[in-house]
Length: 423
Image (cartoon, rainbow, N blue to C red):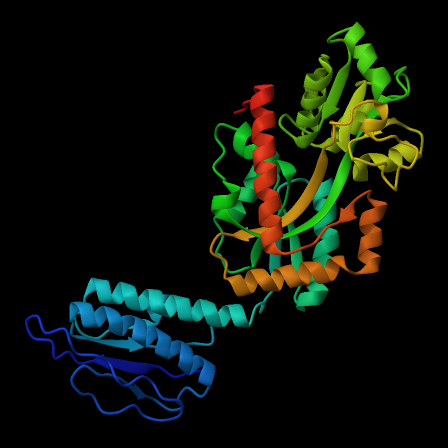
């Protein structure tokens, strides 16, 4: 049973050979019949019950005026049947029934007006069903952990469940592309990171996703430094000693990362450029396999996020050489920052943030942002991030947009300087 019954919109055109001065004068009235048709009038003949919501009437009248302006300029004779339904999933074609031959132009304008009206109403009631948060990486990694923590808090704030869905591959590109192509209604969002939202654009020749073109910023969720860790058999006790070893024997020592072009990979490329050293890169499909091979003695060094490496450092299974934040990490107080080893310019911070498909209504973006900020202000959630070695961020969509632009500029230069280009 629909909330609102269908109504017939009859446009009577008195335009005769160039006379385009007729203007619509009878919009829909709340709870009453519109005046009888006359020259240049829009009228609604309703079937009970009439539309009773003043807000709905206002939105319908906006649509009418939109069509009326086009009609004044082009002068068409048409009669269309419109229906407004409580089910927003019903195809527009099922709501638009052509009664007599009508201009393609007018039908397009009317469809656009109805779409805008429906989108506005939907934004005001968002969310009405569960939300899907896509993660472009496997379960258990830093992005996945951040997504699951914040999704739980946002679900409480919104009163709707947020389901985390892992769609891994192409360094996060598969998940990002899926969200970029999703309906811009706020029910499909992406938890991205430094790589998938900034680095990939410049690194992969077949990259199809452009962050600023394809997404609306929602919120910066958290930040975390990287950790440079070594197998216990490696003589180096800090980053300075590792650099000296690499200088003495170029190409001998290996470092593993979660993938070619990942932030971990580019961080080490930056270090190599700054220190004029040569270490052999061994890429893996994710940080966890790289760390496992490090513990097995198959690698000398691994660069990965603090959330993944901290428990192993604290257990003594691997050695922490440095963290890439300006200061020491609270979760790793005994591991020095890179600048303490004489590398003040080697600062790399991984971050995680939420974006939505381009064109998502502003009201929906604001609702998602409020939910994210509410979640991030929860002390219990902050503690969960802290245990992972991350710091909560938050802020407005505009602030996250500025952050994205700055990161895009920074990593474009880093990729070009490293002369990296992947297929």
